[in-house]
Amino acid sequence: MDIIKIIILLIRTIMKKNIVGLAFLLVFFNTAMAEQVADNQSDVVPITDSLKTETGNEIGISFTNYNYWEPNKSVNLSGSLYGLEYERIQAFDDFFIVGDVIYKQGSLSYSSQSTGSQTGLSNYYYDVRALIGKDFSIDIGNISPFIGVGYRNLYDDNRGKSTTGAAGYQRTISYTYIPVGLIHRTLLQDAKLETRVEYDYLLSGTVNTNLSDTIGSNGITAYPDASNTQKSGWGFRLSSSYQKSNWALTPYFNYWFIQNSDVMYGKATIAGVTYSGGVYEPTNTTVEYGIKVSYKF
Image 1: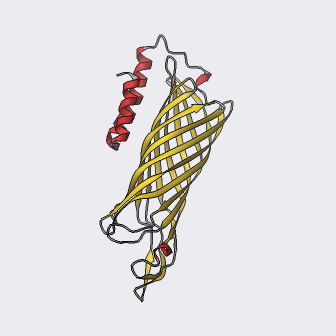
Image 2: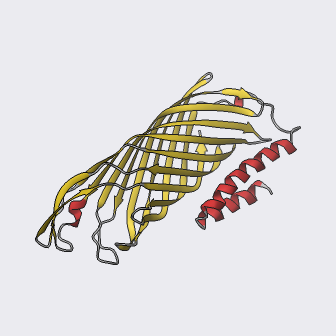
Image 3: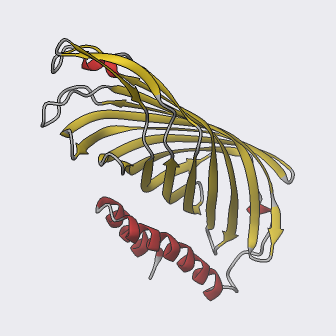
């Protein structure tokens, strides 16, 4: 199967929100590229310094299917996000440093077994990272392990009322984490294939929930805002980038798993009755998969 057909299949799979199919196609994408190298050994450019990390910039646009899930409370936020991404690389012989920024936004749909559903909810997040790594030449190309620090900040605007009349609110979630990963590059006849695998270790997370947004709805006259701390979680990223000339096409998969936060206690007044209780952010997962088109300069 040629590269164009694979790319068309990737786009169709993303549009259908078929996460299992995307995972298989990511693997197949890599396998097909490797077979192209094997089938054209006489035409493949010898492994040279061109596989090493190079100083430069990359700017791209991305389309993402986004899915946030709280299994304990059967809460789901899903929809499409559109993004702008920028990466700056500075190479020093075999070592390199990277700074990258990702911004994505879109409209999501909310559903819950207990509180109904909503549509047209605003969502955005940005991710800022600094990495350091080193290049190693091997028989099948070049590998570059890296480590760094990252900060992710997400905003949900769920204000309004659901189909059951439940009132929504704003929420901000931030993660500080350590990314550890590996980049593999190999040359094709007139292009380059770059695969990235990354594990993200959560250092800390903070969830700020504006529960006071619900005041005035359903008899609520007092409801304090909450700030919870998340201490346990991890993430995973996988991407495979086909790069030709100054352009790159990159299908990707991102995943986060975050465990229960601590509990914040307070009092709320509903219909003249004051209640005491605790608020926490439940265990949740976030899955993103999509495709990025970028330009290197």
